[in-house]
Image (cartoon, rainbow, N blue to C red; front, side, top):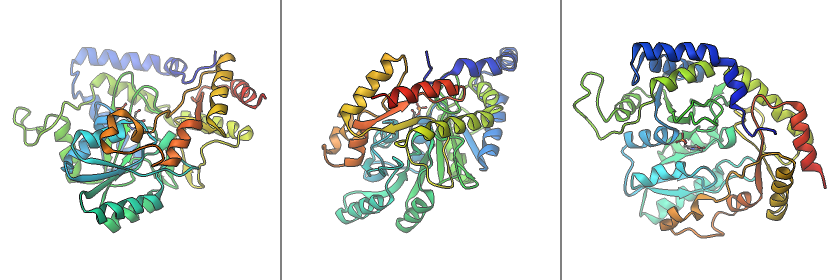
Length: 371
Ligand SMILES: Cc1ncc(COP(=O)(O)O)c(C=O)c1O
C-alpha cells in the first residue's frame, strides 16, 4: 500500500538520537519550557533567517497570538482566502474581528492580489469595518506573492501575517518562509513538512516588540520575571519540551527531505500537467501535491480509481470556508468566490512524502492516466 504520508520511515532515521533526547528530558524533568524549547527556537530562527522564533502549542495559536498582540478585535476587517484550512479564518472570528474573503488565483491557489486590493477598497468605501491585516496562506507549501502583498499592505497601512502552516522550508529567491510580512505562523502538526508527534507551532518575526508581546501571550500574559502576574490577557500557548526535541531531530534531516520532496514533485510533473503552478524563483515546501481535474465528476471518478488501486488521496479542500455553516453569519453565498468554489469541486491531493519511491509515483501516475 502506498502511503499518503510516511512518518515511520522518517522515524527509523532519527529513532536512536531521539530516544536519547527524550530520556534526557525524563531525567531533568523540565517538561514545560525546558532548555530544549529555547534550543529549538534558536535553530528555527536561524533556519528562517529571522531574529525571533517563538514556539507555541499549535499552528492555530501561532496565528491567534500575533493577532491578539496587535489588538485585533470587533470592528476590524482581516483579509484572507476561503481556500485553506478553516483555522486561518477561525482565529479572526474568535477575536470578534471580521474575516473578509478574497478569492485565489486559479494557477497557484494563493490569494489573488488584484482582488485583494478591490476588497480592501470596498471595505474602506462601505466604512463599516476598519481594514487592519492580511493573512495570506502559502497553500500546499507554495509561498504567496509577498512582494506584491507587502506593497498593498504598505499602501493601505495593513499588517501582514503569513500563514506558513504548510510552507516551512519554502522560499522566494533567497528569502525563506517565516521571513515574509510582519510576522509568520507555522504548524508542526505531524503531517506538516516539519511536524512533531502532537500539536505544535511557531511564530517568526524580526519585530522585537511584537516578539516580546507574543512570548507573553503564549504564557498567560506573564513575563519571565513573574509568572504569577499577568500584564495582558493571554493563553496557555506553549510548546512542550518533548515536542521540541522531536522537532530538533527532524530539523537535522529536514533539508535532505526537502530535496527528496523536490525530486518527487519534479517526477510527478514529468507526466502530469495539471498540478499547482509554481512560479519561477518560488520554492515550495511540497507539503501536498495537488492536481485539478476538469470537472467534479472526473475528480470523483479519479478518487475512486485511485482507491481501487490501493492509492490513497485526499481532497484539500472540499468546502471553501465562506460556505461553511460556522461562517454562515458572514452572509456569503455560492457564486461569491468562484475560483475557490470551482477548485474545491475539482482538486485532489496525491501521495507526497520524502520517502515515496519512483515506482510508487509511477503507479499513481499510471492510475491517473488510465482511461
Ligand atoms: C493553512 C493552515 N493554517 C492553519 C492551520 C492550523 O494549524 P494547527 O493544526 O497546527 O493548529 C493549518 C493546519 O492544518 C493549516 O493547514
